Length: 162
Image 1 (cartoon, rainbow, N blue to C red):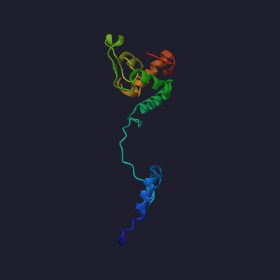
Image 2: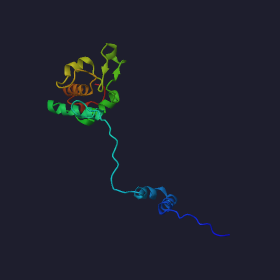
Image 3: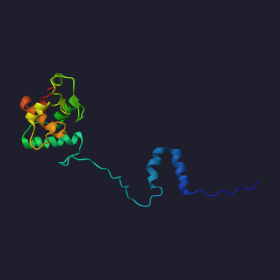
Image 4: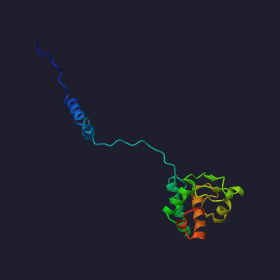
């Protein structure tokens, strides 16, 4: 029986088959080279990052950093770690958190915001240059840190409900 002529496989197909057999680790390293015509990188998709009016990221990290900048201007002591630790304990990072069950809530003045501040404390320790909204993350952090500085020396010295 005569041999049937088989079409010659392309060199790339043979290389890919060999790489697939030898393992995906090698394939991952070599495949980008197969068929590459230039050394350009892919352009990442455009994403919209929300920012505060001051230009900080509209995230817990951004709120803390913006508060620290205001605190530095107003000479209010406190550190990123001290604020973060207290925020996590008080609200788990939820700027809309409200405590409707403690003694303050029973008196009609529930604790609110990232650092669970009551309205009279927020009003007494509000820092100029921040919003007059207790749920505003930067205003809440900054007022709470101002209160903690007056009462405990710094938010860094607060390790429980305050």
